Amino acid sequence: MDAATHKPANSNELQRSTTDLAAPFPYRSAPGTSDDALQAAFNRAVDSKVNTQLSVIVEGIGDAFYALDGNWRFTYINRAAEAYFGISREMMLHHQIWDLFPGAEGTALRRRYEEVVASGEPASFESEAVGVPGRYLEFHVFPYEGGLGVSFRDWTERRRAEEELRESEARLSSLANNALACMFYQTSHSSDFRERKVLYVSKTCERLTGIPAEVVQADPGLLYNLVLPEYREEMLAREIEAQHALRAFQSEFEMWHAQTGEARWHRIIVTPRRLENGAHVWDGIQIDVTDHKRAEVHLRLLVNELNHRVKNTLATVQSLTAQSFNRPGSRRSEEAANAYRTFEARLFALARGHDVLTRENWEGASLADIVAQTFAPYRCEDPEECPRIQIDGPDLRVPPPVALSLSMALHELSTNALKYGALGSSGGQVRVSWPVARKDQATRLSMRWEEHGGPTVPPPSRKGFGSRLIQQGLAGS
Image 1 (cartoon, rainbow, N blue to C red):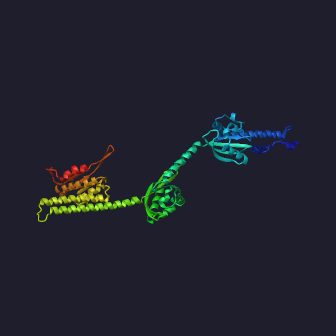
Image 2: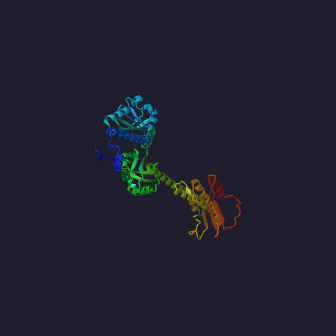
Image 3: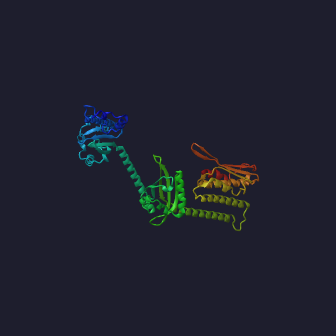
């Protein structure tokens, strides 16, 4: 070897060679030094550096890790594995894993380790821990330097949470699948309503609509095809509007049963729900309300029949009264005629109260309607030109007994105002108001009757029917 071939590498060669730690050592040996010995020393330095870097990584990944040689002896254990086993690394290194954990004999975990050694293929699996009974681990096992590398993490709490979630879902699914007259479903949220997906449909879908749940989940359009055509457009428009506004909605419609062909009434109630990740889903319930609808129709028929009979009864009472006051061959006095007119007017007031309640199916009545009905005979066609009656108060709902009592009481007051008060004068005015006051979480209504521009009225010498009605009958209601 001559001197010309023994010059050192330039800086570029040194830079290039030292960046490839796996490349052969680029320098020639110095005189009297073995090339093989120098190369071996360099390789050991490189291995030491690589092992140090790998150790830093393995210690910092968070998962437990250990390495076994071809004889199942521990060659490396990171801090996470040491903490998990509760045994110092010094006591475990260079000892066989099966000696330290004899309970692994015949377990599925040992069998999986042996399969990786035999096949040379990595494997990921879950298994109950051998060293710590009652804990569940997630393993990744792979061939490593003639033995095995094993990383694992404890997923016991996650497993328990998943099991509890599955049990909870099973209970909810069982409840939903056994509901008598409704089905539950869930859909995903999408900016385009038509791109949403059905995530869940309870088994009651087939009983309710005639189509199996799994078929509806695959093609929800099948349910829309069962909706009677006159309801589809409005129903779809309301759903799209609610989807864009993220607002709950409900709708009633008729749809055919896919198996029987019967048209039945359904009600859907759909509510958006925000998930922990910020996304939204839609929870829905569909109920068969056919029997409820039929009951409503039957009840309406009964109420109409009752109203008709009440009117007939009032007409019969009116006829009996007229016959009683007008007996054939008798001469009716002026006093009797006045009594008849008064009684008839009261009968009409009662009938008007019944009319208001009839329009509301006897569920209650509007206070404003009751007052307006009472003053209908006395109001001008144009209230602005002839403001004889002034009404001021919120439109409240009152129960039927109160509605009838108020109708009769207001009739007595207006009749009295016509005979003796403001309504009997051309410039007289009557104002009725009913402010509502709230005190101590209670609500109190105060109705006030005011007359202006009428004659001076002396206190009555006796208490008539109207006074007794207001002071006793109305107060009792």
